[in-house]
Amino acid sequence: MMREHDQTLEIRRVREDEMPLAIRLADSVFRDYDPDKKSFARSHPQLFAPGLCQSFAAFLDGKPVSFVGLVPSVVRIGRARLRCCSIGGVCTHPDYRGKGYAGLVLQRVLDHIDRSGASLLLVSGNRSLYKRANCFEFGTFRNYSIDRERAAGLAQRGVTDVAIREAEAADWFGLLEAAETRLNAFDQSLWDLALMIEAEPAGAPMKQYHKVLVAERDGVIRAFAVIGVPYRNSATVPRTFEWAGEASLVALLLAEALQRYNIGELMVPVAWHDAEMRELLEQAGIRSAAAKNVGTIRIVRPER
Image (cartoon, rainbow, N blue to C red; front, side, top):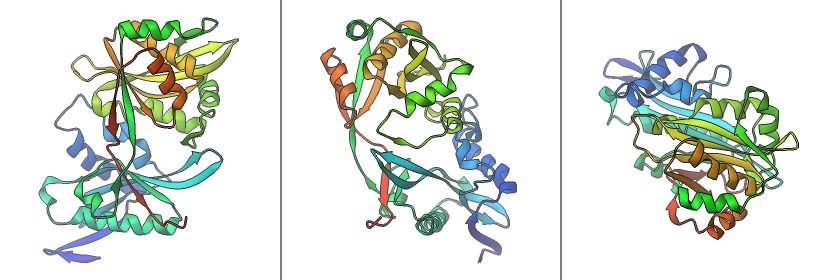
């Protein structure tokens, strides 16, 4: 606890009863200028989850003025499991910027994740704030752009013994089983998967709704794709946010999305390790461009 211009400054974890104040701060920074956007608590519920309460803030006389949202998770890479933390929703009230509060909160977060035994920190940004804390840019992927002409060719390369439809309320077990076929992914429970699809954390900032298409064979969901469909007043390009299951069936779902949602172009970001999906898209003649991850990463302790 410190004194700051006759005010008491605290850098600490946000308590459950203080989450409404943290949400109000985040919304004032990320949403109030644009009423079409969701509350940050709805689009990023894990940052403000009761019980978990891993986020930190700088408090002046009990009022949060700078916030760093923190979410712990486990990342699966083949048979390996890595303890990982992610930060997002980092914001400071305009009246308190330039005072170094965000840096103080971030340092407390770094100490916390080290004590937790995490191996990696993933950051949804590449600001100088993070780079000063030894967070580095990493990794590339390819952005594939599917138009209707290419989508027709992509559909022809798929299979025909499946039913394609929008996901329903009774599909969560099937969606989870498809998600668990991925070799590299965040560990997710059924609740985690449902929460992330319904919250639209990636779609909401881009003013895009999540639409979930599934490919079903013999009554079993073999693949799904989460498609971002723009709001009426959004000029953003529709985007595929997530998929899982048989690559050939995912390709069918991408082709279906253009027709079903009247999309002229669909962006599909594909990581380097998704070799089968990349091969399918390239065989269909779909153009792509190299892109860099927009976030940064910090190795907490190399020996982990």
